[in-house]
Image (cartoon, rainbow, N blue to C red; front, top):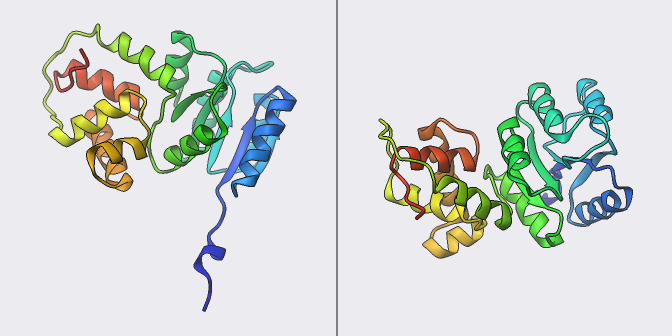
Length: 221
């Protein structure tokens, strides 16, 4: 009998990070957890050149403060070249302007470098499952900004469960933590988040939270 697990292809990643020691340590953690690291780059230009030449990972893990082209500009180009690839930001930057710029550029998640290896892996898994995870520090900052929005009425509405999942996710809870708190499966949480994105016509969690508040569907006060 064929072992199905052995036939499972590893998730393919590209790492873009200019600090060699940190890049090597992250790469080592990823490989130990069974990920296939297709490429490691110290700048965005070299990575984009490889993407144009046919390199096609499942996920790109990128810093923002890079020599030459910034991570934010790079994310925009990556999303144009590889629209289906998942992009996760791993950076030391926590200022509001860079966070929103990265998410607006198309990043699927935002993680601060100070986090643990376990947090990194769980965040990767969440992104690959269709989520848009945010570092708890970033989530708190975004929520404080969105609380100032004035609600407006919209045509589309969310179910009570969708609102619950969106509110907990916005607070920085992982997909597993949301599932445990609500007594549902992680798959269900992912599906609820996808429905929220579809109904609100957005592509990431901060945009979903912002739009839900504007439509009077979510109260984070």
